[in-house]
Image (cartoon, rainbow, N blue to C red; front, side, top):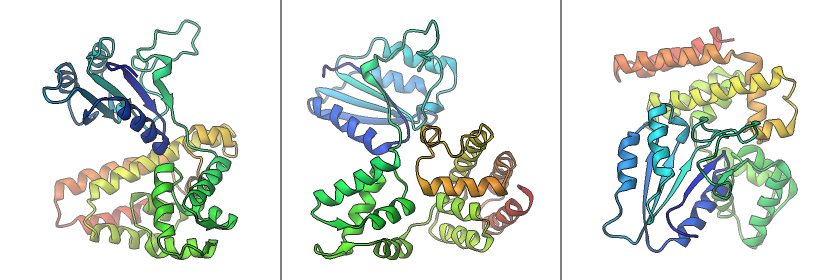
Length: 325
Protein backbone atom coordinates (compact mmCIF):
# COMPACT_ATOMS: atom_id res chain seq x y z
CA UNK A 1 0.00 0.00 0.00
CA UNK A 2 1.22 3.46 -0.87
CA UNK A 3 1.33 6.18 1.73
CA UNK A 4 -0.97 9.19 1.68
CA UNK A 5 -4.23 7.23 1.64
CA UNK A 6 -7.50 7.71 3.52
CA UNK A 7 -9.80 4.94 4.74
CA UNK A 8 -13.37 4.78 6.03
CA UNK A 9 -14.09 1.89 8.42
CA UNK A 10 -17.68 1.65 9.71
CA UNK A 11 -19.79 -0.86 11.63
CA UNK A 12 -19.90 -2.50 15.07
CA UNK A 13 -17.59 -5.49 14.43
CA UNK A 14 -14.62 -4.06 16.31
CA UNK A 15 -12.35 -7.12 16.12
CA UNK A 16 -12.26 -7.35 12.33
CA UNK A 17 -11.96 -3.57 12.15
CA UNK A 18 -8.89 -3.71 14.41
CA UNK A 19 -7.41 -6.46 12.24
CA UNK A 20 -7.82 -4.23 9.18
CA UNK A 21 -6.10 -1.35 10.98
CA UNK A 22 -3.24 -3.68 11.97
CA UNK A 23 -2.84 -4.69 8.33
CA UNK A 24 -2.50 -1.04 7.29
CA UNK A 25 -0.10 -0.37 10.15
CA UNK A 26 2.19 -3.17 8.94
CA UNK A 27 2.52 -1.57 5.50
CA UNK A 28 3.87 1.69 6.93
CA UNK A 29 7.58 2.16 7.70
CA UNK A 30 8.02 2.82 11.43
CA UNK A 31 4.75 4.75 11.74
CA UNK A 32 4.05 7.39 14.35
CA UNK A 33 0.47 6.67 15.50
CA UNK A 34 -2.05 9.22 16.80
CA UNK A 35 -5.76 8.86 17.60
CA UNK A 36 -8.43 11.55 17.92
CA UNK A 37 -12.04 11.34 19.09
CA UNK A 38 -14.50 13.35 17.02
CA UNK A 39 -16.49 15.62 19.28
CA UNK A 40 -13.63 15.92 21.78
CA UNK A 41 -10.85 17.44 19.65
CA UNK A 42 -11.88 20.33 17.33
CA UNK A 43 -11.75 19.31 13.66
CA UNK A 44 -9.59 22.33 12.84
CA UNK A 45 -6.96 21.01 15.28
CA UNK A 46 -7.14 17.51 13.78
CA UNK A 47 -6.73 18.87 10.24
CA UNK A 48 -3.87 21.16 11.31
CA UNK A 49 -2.12 18.12 12.79
CA UNK A 50 -2.71 16.10 9.60
CA UNK A 51 -1.32 18.84 7.39
CA UNK A 52 1.92 19.03 9.35
CA UNK A 53 4.27 16.16 8.58
CA UNK A 54 6.16 14.29 11.27
CA UNK A 55 9.60 15.53 12.22
CA UNK A 56 10.72 12.23 13.74
CA UNK A 57 9.07 9.34 11.88
CA UNK A 58 9.09 8.31 8.21
CA UNK A 59 5.32 7.77 8.22
CA UNK A 60 2.21 8.46 10.28
CA UNK A 61 -0.99 6.57 11.06
CA UNK A 62 -3.82 8.85 12.21
CA UNK A 63 -7.15 7.43 13.40
CA UNK A 64 -10.28 9.54 13.88
CA UNK A 65 -12.70 7.61 16.10
CA UNK A 66 -16.45 8.14 16.66
CA UNK A 67 -16.72 9.92 13.31
CA UNK A 68 -20.52 9.90 13.62
CA UNK A 69 -20.04 12.81 16.07
CA UNK A 70 -18.97 15.01 13.15
CA UNK A 71 -22.20 16.90 12.66
CA UNK A 72 -21.46 20.43 11.48
CA UNK A 73 -21.07 21.09 7.76
CA UNK A 74 -18.05 23.32 8.27
CA UNK A 75 -16.35 20.49 10.20
CA UNK A 76 -16.96 17.89 7.52
CA UNK A 77 -15.98 20.37 4.80
CA UNK A 78 -12.69 21.03 6.56
CA UNK A 79 -11.95 17.33 6.94
CA UNK A 80 -12.96 16.68 3.33
CA UNK A 81 -10.46 19.29 2.15
CA UNK A 82 -7.71 17.18 3.72
CA UNK A 83 -9.10 13.83 2.49
CA UNK A 84 -9.02 15.10 -1.09
CA UNK A 85 -5.33 16.02 -0.77
CA UNK A 86 -3.71 13.90 1.98
CA UNK A 87 -0.11 14.20 3.10
CA UNK A 88 2.22 11.74 1.39
CA UNK A 89 3.61 10.40 4.66
CA UNK A 90 0.21 9.86 6.34
CA UNK A 91 -2.43 7.13 6.35
CA UNK A 92 -5.73 8.43 7.77
CA UNK A 93 -8.43 6.06 9.03
CA UNK A 94 -11.88 7.48 9.84
CA UNK A 95 -13.89 5.08 12.00
CA UNK A 96 -17.35 4.76 13.53
CA UNK A 97 -19.44 1.96 15.02
CA UNK A 98 -22.39 3.23 12.98
CA UNK A 99 -23.23 1.86 9.53
CA UNK A 100 -23.43 5.28 7.84
CA UNK A 101 -22.04 8.77 8.31
CA UNK A 102 -23.47 12.05 7.03
CA UNK A 103 -24.06 12.55 3.33
CA UNK A 104 -20.94 14.68 2.84
CA UNK A 105 -18.46 12.15 4.23
CA UNK A 106 -20.39 9.05 3.19
CA UNK A 107 -22.75 9.82 0.25
CA UNK A 108 -25.32 7.20 -0.69
CA UNK A 109 -23.98 5.35 -3.72
CA UNK A 110 -27.35 3.70 -4.38
CA UNK A 111 -28.96 6.95 -5.49
CA UNK A 112 -29.75 7.47 -9.18
CA UNK A 113 -27.11 10.21 -9.42
CA UNK A 114 -24.73 9.58 -6.51
CA UNK A 115 -22.14 12.11 -5.41
CA UNK A 116 -18.49 11.10 -5.89
CA UNK A 117 -17.42 9.35 -2.71
CA UNK A 118 -14.41 10.99 -1.00
CA UNK A 119 -13.03 7.55 -0.08
CA UNK A 120 -12.19 5.11 -2.92
CA UNK A 121 -14.36 1.98 -2.92
CA UNK A 122 -11.34 -0.19 -2.05
CA UNK A 123 -10.64 1.98 0.99
CA UNK A 124 -14.06 1.89 2.66
CA UNK A 125 -15.53 -1.07 4.52
CA UNK A 126 -18.54 -1.71 6.72
CA UNK A 127 -17.74 -4.32 9.36
CA UNK A 128 -21.03 -6.04 10.17
CA UNK A 129 -21.42 -8.26 13.22
CA UNK A 130 -20.92 -11.92 12.40
CA UNK A 131 -24.10 -13.96 12.06
CA UNK A 132 -24.71 -16.80 14.51
CA UNK A 133 -23.20 -19.52 12.31
CA UNK A 134 -20.02 -17.52 11.72
CA UNK A 135 -19.70 -16.78 15.44
CA UNK A 136 -19.95 -20.48 16.24
CA UNK A 137 -17.31 -21.21 13.59
CA UNK A 138 -15.10 -18.41 14.96
CA UNK A 139 -15.21 -19.75 18.54
CA UNK A 140 -14.61 -23.33 17.36
CA UNK A 141 -11.59 -22.21 15.34
CA UNK A 142 -10.19 -20.23 18.28
CA UNK A 143 -10.28 -23.23 20.63
CA UNK A 144 -8.92 -25.55 17.95
CA UNK A 145 -5.97 -23.21 17.25
CA UNK A 146 -5.23 -23.09 20.98
CA UNK A 147 -5.27 -26.90 21.17
CA UNK A 148 -8.33 -26.84 23.42
CA UNK A 149 -11.81 -28.39 23.27
CA UNK A 150 -15.25 -26.97 23.95
CA UNK A 151 -18.63 -28.66 23.54
CA UNK A 152 -21.35 -27.27 21.23
CA UNK A 153 -23.50 -26.36 24.23
CA UNK A 154 -20.45 -24.65 25.73
CA UNK A 155 -20.17 -22.48 22.62
CA UNK A 156 -23.88 -21.70 22.76
CA UNK A 157 -23.64 -20.68 26.41
CA UNK A 158 -20.54 -18.56 25.73
CA UNK A 159 -22.25 -16.68 22.89
CA UNK A 160 -25.29 -16.11 25.09
CA UNK A 161 -23.23 -14.58 27.92
CA UNK A 162 -20.58 -12.59 26.05
CA UNK A 163 -20.92 -9.59 23.73
CA UNK A 164 -20.32 -11.12 20.34
CA UNK A 165 -17.80 -8.86 18.64
CA UNK A 166 -14.65 -10.80 17.83
CA UNK A 167 -12.40 -8.58 19.93
CA UNK A 168 -14.44 -9.34 23.06
CA UNK A 169 -14.84 -13.00 22.10
CA UNK A 170 -11.06 -13.32 21.72
CA UNK A 171 -10.52 -11.72 25.12
CA UNK A 172 -13.14 -13.83 26.91
CA UNK A 173 -12.17 -17.10 25.22
CA UNK A 174 -8.57 -16.51 26.29
CA UNK A 175 -9.75 -15.86 29.84
CA UNK A 176 -11.93 -18.98 29.81
CA UNK A 177 -9.17 -21.41 28.82
CA UNK A 178 -6.97 -20.07 31.63
CA UNK A 179 -9.36 -21.65 34.18
CA UNK A 180 -9.00 -25.24 32.94
CA UNK A 181 -6.37 -27.88 32.29
CA UNK A 182 -5.30 -28.40 28.68
CA UNK A 183 -6.95 -31.83 28.58
CA UNK A 184 -10.29 -30.60 29.92
CA UNK A 185 -13.21 -30.28 27.49
CA UNK A 186 -15.07 -27.11 28.43
CA UNK A 187 -18.84 -27.51 28.83
CA UNK A 188 -21.81 -25.18 29.18
CA UNK A 189 -21.69 -25.69 32.95
CA UNK A 190 -18.02 -24.62 32.99
CA UNK A 191 -18.79 -21.49 30.98
CA UNK A 192 -21.71 -20.56 33.24
CA UNK A 193 -19.60 -21.09 36.39
CA UNK A 194 -16.72 -18.93 35.14
CA UNK A 195 -18.77 -16.04 33.81
CA UNK A 196 -21.43 -15.92 36.50
CA UNK A 197 -18.70 -15.56 39.16
CA UNK A 198 -16.33 -13.27 37.29
CA UNK A 199 -18.53 -11.12 35.07
CA UNK A 200 -17.69 -7.44 35.33
CA UNK A 201 -20.62 -5.10 35.74
CA UNK A 202 -21.13 -2.21 33.33
CA UNK A 203 -23.87 0.12 32.14
CA UNK A 204 -24.76 -2.61 29.64
CA UNK A 205 -25.25 -5.31 32.29
CA UNK A 206 -27.29 -2.73 34.20
CA UNK A 207 -29.48 -2.28 31.12
CA UNK A 208 -29.91 -6.06 30.95
CA UNK A 209 -31.23 -6.04 34.54
CA UNK A 210 -33.50 -3.10 33.71
CA UNK A 211 -34.78 -4.91 30.61
CA UNK A 212 -35.72 -7.94 32.73
CA UNK A 213 -37.85 -5.75 35.02
CA UNK A 214 -35.85 -6.69 38.13
CA UNK A 215 -35.53 -3.53 40.25
CA UNK A 216 -33.69 -5.27 43.10
CA UNK A 217 -30.93 -6.65 40.85
CA UNK A 218 -30.76 -3.35 38.96
CA UNK A 219 -30.10 -1.47 42.22
CA UNK A 220 -27.51 -4.08 43.19
CA UNK A 221 -25.69 -3.65 39.87
CA UNK A 222 -25.90 0.13 40.15
CA UNK A 223 -24.33 0.10 43.62
CA UNK A 224 -21.57 -2.23 42.40
CA UNK A 225 -20.76 0.25 39.64
CA UNK A 226 -20.75 3.24 41.98
CA UNK A 227 -18.60 1.35 44.50
CA UNK A 228 -16.07 0.65 41.73
CA UNK A 229 -15.84 4.42 41.15
CA UNK A 230 -17.81 4.36 37.89
CA UNK A 231 -19.17 7.89 37.46
CA UNK A 232 -22.90 8.54 37.07
CA UNK A 233 -22.08 10.36 33.82
CA UNK A 234 -20.45 7.22 32.38
CA UNK A 235 -23.40 5.09 33.51
CA UNK A 236 -25.88 7.51 31.95
CA UNK A 237 -23.87 7.59 28.72
CA UNK A 238 -24.01 3.79 28.45
CA UNK A 239 -27.72 3.64 29.29
CA UNK A 240 -28.50 6.42 26.80
CA UNK A 241 -26.82 4.37 24.08
CA UNK A 242 -28.96 1.38 25.08
CA UNK A 243 -32.18 3.41 25.05
CA UNK A 244 -31.36 4.78 21.60
CA UNK A 245 -30.85 1.17 20.46
CA UNK A 246 -34.20 0.33 22.08
CA UNK A 247 -35.86 3.02 19.94
CA UNK A 248 -34.19 1.49 16.89
CA UNK A 249 -35.41 -1.97 17.89
CA UNK A 250 -38.96 -0.60 18.32
CA UNK A 251 -38.88 0.73 14.75
CA UNK A 252 -37.78 -2.68 13.48
CA UNK A 253 -40.55 -4.38 15.44
CA UNK A 254 -43.10 -1.90 14.04
CA UNK A 255 -42.01 -2.94 10.54
CA UNK A 256 -42.45 -6.61 11.44
CA UNK A 257 -38.68 -7.23 11.41
CA UNK A 258 -38.17 -8.29 15.05
CA UNK A 259 -37.58 -11.88 13.88
CA UNK A 260 -35.75 -11.03 10.67
CA UNK A 261 -32.15 -12.13 11.24
CA UNK A 262 -30.73 -10.15 8.32
CA UNK A 263 -32.44 -6.91 9.36
CA UNK A 264 -31.44 -7.38 13.00
CA UNK A 265 -27.81 -8.09 12.07
CA UNK A 266 -27.67 -5.04 9.83
CA UNK A 267 -28.97 -2.89 12.68
CA UNK A 268 -26.50 -4.27 15.23
CA UNK A 269 -28.73 -6.81 17.00
CA UNK A 270 -26.94 -9.99 15.90
CA UNK A 271 -26.22 -11.37 19.40
CA UNK A 272 -29.02 -13.59 20.72
CA UNK A 273 -28.61 -12.27 24.28
CA UNK A 274 -28.88 -8.71 22.99
CA UNK A 275 -32.10 -9.52 21.14
CA UNK A 276 -33.58 -11.05 24.29
CA UNK A 277 -32.76 -7.92 26.29
CA UNK A 278 -34.27 -5.53 23.77
CA UNK A 279 -37.35 -7.69 23.20
CA UNK A 280 -37.93 -7.73 26.97
CA UNK A 281 -37.26 -3.99 27.31
CA UNK A 282 -39.67 -3.22 24.47
CA UNK A 283 -42.52 -4.77 26.46
CA UNK A 284 -41.78 -2.64 29.51
CA UNK A 285 -40.37 0.74 28.52
CA UNK A 286 -40.84 3.73 26.25
CA UNK A 287 -37.40 4.58 24.85
CA UNK A 288 -38.11 8.31 24.46
CA UNK A 289 -39.32 8.60 28.08
CA UNK A 290 -36.22 6.71 29.27
CA UNK A 291 -33.91 9.01 27.33
CA UNK A 292 -35.64 12.12 28.66
CA UNK A 293 -35.43 10.87 32.26
CA UNK A 294 -31.77 9.93 31.83
CA UNK A 295 -30.91 13.39 30.49
CA UNK A 296 -32.88 15.01 33.35
CA UNK A 297 -31.05 13.08 36.08
CA UNK A 298 -27.67 13.49 34.39
CA UNK A 299 -28.14 17.27 34.61
CA UNK A 300 -29.57 17.02 38.14
CA UNK A 301 -26.58 15.06 39.48
CA UNK A 302 -24.09 17.34 37.75
CA UNK A 303 -25.72 20.36 39.41
CA UNK A 304 -25.83 18.80 42.93
CA UNK A 305 -22.29 17.36 42.98
CA UNK A 306 -21.17 14.13 44.65
CA UNK A 307 -23.03 14.44 47.93
CA UNK A 308 -26.40 13.20 46.69
CA UNK A 309 -25.38 11.11 43.68
CA UNK A 310 -26.12 7.70 45.26
CA UNK A 311 -29.59 8.78 46.44
CA UNK A 312 -30.41 10.44 43.13
CA UNK A 313 -29.24 7.40 41.16
CA UNK A 314 -31.54 5.19 43.26
CA UNK A 315 -34.42 7.59 42.60
CA UNK A 316 -33.59 7.56 38.90
CA UNK A 317 -33.95 3.78 38.72
CA UNK A 318 -37.15 3.72 40.76
CA UNK A 319 -38.74 6.36 38.54
CA UNK A 320 -37.51 4.57 35.41
CA UNK A 321 -39.29 1.39 36.52
CA UNK A 322 -42.54 3.13 37.43
CA UNK A 323 -43.01 6.00 34.96
CA UNK A 324 -41.23 5.08 31.72
CA UNK A 325 -43.48 2.27 30.61
